[in-house]
Image 1 (tube, rainbow, N blue to C red):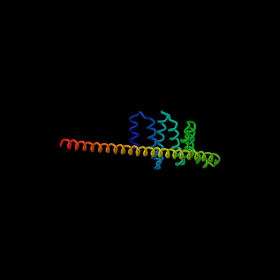
Image 2 (image 1 turned 90 degrees about the horizontal axis):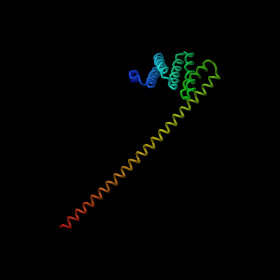
Image 3 (image 1 turned 180 degrees about the vertical axis):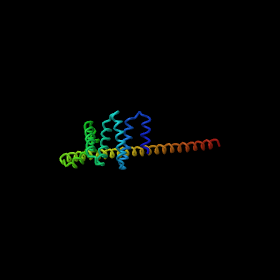
Image 4 (image 1 turned 135 degrees about the vertical axis):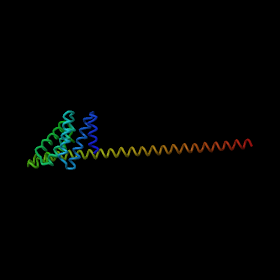
Length: 193
């Protein structure tokens, strides 16, 4: 529901084609995940039309990968291979190897299904290599994120402790000043008495 509203709003604004193509593709992915493949393909085709006007290699590769997956699920193997080839070739040519993962996976499944085990093995190895690389990269990012979070929290604790110590010193100084004032007042009273 929110994705559909986002698409409608972006269409009305008309000034963010990249955001619009991402939102449209997300809607397609939602429908693909719910196995409403026809509706998913409608959204992917709409995203492709938009990407024809405002080309973005990574987004284009991503949409082709999604279309390859849906066509494979629908047993439209020829179409799936065409989209998988496009996904794979665009991502490699544009130096976005992470975008090649879905294309490599569908190509692996296609070649295996066709009995071309040499190409299937080649694509399977590539798929697992890229997929492992992305997972490792994701894990590395998560470790770095956790390190930054730890450092930030540590700094906040240090700042809080420093602030508490500073408040303690100020309170002690105020207490000493108050005592001195009291002693002076008593001294003045005794001296005048």
